[in-house]
Image (cartoon, rainbow, N blue to C red; front, side):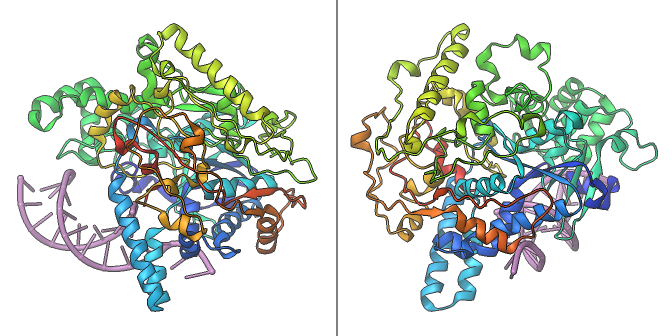
Length: 577
DNA sequence: AGGCGGTCTAAAT
DNA sequence: TAGACCGCCT
């Protein structure tokens, strides 16, 4: 995960601090790490999908830390992961198996009455799910905590916010565990923040400016630093054997240029360097520089750093590795947590009882603007629409029309979706399948088959991916082989179709298991009460007494993600431990 | 010296 | 599960 050995290497520049330092400032939070840690406090409940409050302890954990920041007058800006980067989608099965194995072992222990051993195993079986993310979003909304769902990597979004002036919604620092933030060029990063607010901080400018510090970065700029990170091995690209962070640093110091380092590598360790290393390397560096992020001012996707001329010269389709483009409306809906970034399904758990939903507090820039997507009416209608994609839509459009076609399709889908009385099951389909990668609200943190990944991505362009109506949050449970327990625990028996029967089946009536599952509606108020009880009320964050419904257990009818490579199944993305 | 593989252990309450 | 740590090997 992250850049191999980077933090150790940068140790001299990492200093202990207390977040108090950022009083009065906005600070970004990489939500994944707190969700993940929080999940340990209730791993069994999460695995068993127990009813009741204990399952929500990860929310407590999270909100406790949010409150801690607020206590120190810090404005937390929570950033959640959106879709997965195309090149990062690896290593599903192994994790599947391990997690399942742990789960099964835990169940055995549990039946034996050995709760201790069971919990230990459950802890190895938990993963952060989009359900958890969504639950968190509900609470953040109700607590008026600013948040944003990144279109892709939260890291990139955080780095972008870090680059903005504070007046434009920028943040002064980022709290995370992930060294990738440095590769993305994040100005100030706080690692290992504990429950009291103590952490370890690295300020990137100090690194470049330091004169007599041990690893010297005197002649480095951000690009060279990023290149060093990629050389050392990152999630997008493993390092050349024999090259670690120290040599990466040495090479960059010596040659002062990516090109020279690459050609040196090739001559020096010829056969150890994959043929496509140079191109993969360049792409990986580009991702760290130009990843697609959401611009809250423009309300659309843009690049972390403006594209260089080289990249601008590339055909549109060639930029997919930076994260496929999304129409502004879709991007906004994702960012505001109204649709699932993976499946593009509406996050409609709001049955909206009596009251109008509260708007989430956006960045102050956005406060006066309405979140149009939240304006949904309650309706008893059981009608569901499913947006379909016909085979011809899977063809690749000429570049000129591609974007437009995609946008208009996305937008009209979104419109339908949002105008439907009951948006519960609506799915936005990409007009071009390749434009919607396998997604997960949380990225896979470790990638073992990246080389393959790059190769396969090309194939994936042709892949057909579609999703039938299903709850995004429960997508994982549509796997016959994994997370079956989730279904079981909810008393839902779904005869899950095999995933490999790809083919474009759009017959929803046929392919969709009817809603025989229980649609347990959990009043968000329950969550709320819980949170209110366990967290301290903090300045400005007024608790909502409104109770809107959160449908947590609407079972997945079926989720299909048909790609050329089955390992790209969406299911893979729920296995990050 | 540095890469790399193996082992230990904390994570949350 | 992943980061930290250790010791061997290049």
